[in-house]
Every structure is written in structure tokens, then in C-alpha cells.
Image 1 (spheres, helix red, strand yellow):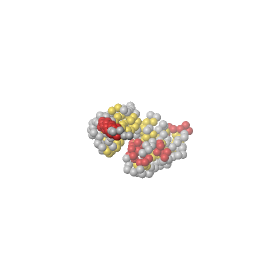
Image 2 (image 1 turned 180 degrees about the horizontal axis):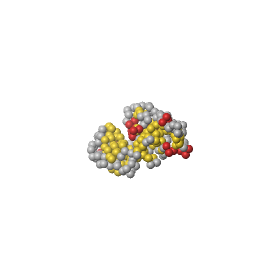
Image 3 (image 1 turned 45 degrees about the vertical axis):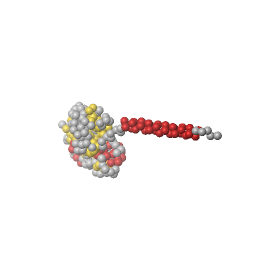
Image 4 (image 1 turned 90 degrees about the vertical axis):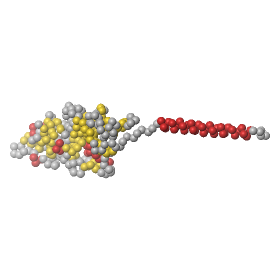
Length: 297
């Protein structure tokens, strides 16, 4: 038997439940919406290409391409210390602009360029290890060994890290930067002498950030590692009275590939795989002794 009014009462509960769920959904949507409005995505860092380099004591920061960085939005750090003002970085920094700083006698380890957004978010744009020592030195083109100094400028190629950076900026993976024959290349305290034409670094190789030593493992017998721990002189040889040949004394043998020899103010490197026993004018050629520098008096 159905009592009067029972069907009406049964229909009230589902209606109330539905209203409650709708109300709850609206409240949750409001809370999520408010949270999303309160939270804004961080401003993306500008896309720029920046090259950091040095010529002796002069440290340079050059923008190659990309957005203009407004003055005050970027910081140039040297070993974590703000040197923006010293670089003249109180200007808008756009493509083609080079900022420079004469580091003098200061040691320079790592140079970094950091962008800071209006919201205070900092992004590293570029960084390079210079590795310049203090005390007034630091020109990597001036080689000092056993109290003697040699100028390598006339035979200088480039710093390896600059080659890598340039290769990364190429368009296609198969594009290359060619290393110049009979030039010196420097990487993190190591000096290498390129023997051959056609040796090059591909863009896809550069993306792996290889050291020059690693590059030479992949391209064997193309470059000579220069041994900078000693330099031989005529005092380390015995002369021949009949010609200009000088035989290396036993106490300096073996005279291996990469050994340096100085005579008549000229610095030579030995490039042959077979140890040398003699130095003479007839041995100065592409397969034995090649000049790489001039002695500084």
C-alpha cells in the first residue's frame, strides 16, 4: 500500500544532493582559478648567442645574435664577482656589441654572463673558463720555460674553446670550422700544433663539448702535443766540425715528438714519430723540426 506523499519525499534527496555537488564544484573551480591567477609562469630568458674570449689581459664579451639585453638586466661575473661596470656594461647589450675589461695583474678563472628578469629569476646565458694567472702574466701566447720566454703570436691559431663555440653556431650538423695548418691551438694549459690541411671540427662534434685532447683522439696523427716542460738548446748538443749538425747528448734523449728546441732566437717543435738524434738546417722541414716561436730577450 502506497502512502500519500511518499513519492514526493523520496524525490527531494536526489535533488538536494545534486545541488550540493554543483555548489561544491563551483567552489572548487573558484579556488583553483584563484590559485592560477595568483601564480604566473616565470618570464622566459632571452635567446642570445654570446662569445667570451681574451687576448692577453683583455677579456671580451661579445653578443653574436639574439635579443637586446637592457642595461641592468644582465651581469658579468668573474669568478663569481660582479665586474659588469668594469666591462662597461651600463649599456644595452645587443648583437655586434663587444664589452671588454683589462684584467691587468688579476687572475681570471671563469667568466659568466647572467640575465635577471623583472621577477628576479636569474638565468646563465654564457660561461667560459679563461684560466689566466695573476701577477701580471697570463698571456697564453707567451710561453715561459726554464727561465726563457718565447712569443708564439706569429704561429697562433686560436683557443680551442672559441673554435668549439663557433662550430656550435653553425647552421647544419655537417658544417665545419677548419683549423689552419702549421698553427698553434690552446686548450686548458695544453698547446697543440696542427700539421695538416683539412682538419676540421663539425657542428655535431662541437655539441659534445670535446676537449682538444679528446678531439685528437678522434682525429689521430693530425696534431702534435707540444711538451712545454723543457726546451733544449745547443748546450744540450755536440757540434760537428764539418757541418752545422748538432747531435743531442745522451742525457736529454729521447728527443720525442713534441720536444722544443731553441737556437738563434728561434723556437722549433719536433713533429716526427721517430725520436730525433740531430738538429741542423737540413732537418728544418715539414717532417721534422718546424718553427713555432721567437725567443724574447
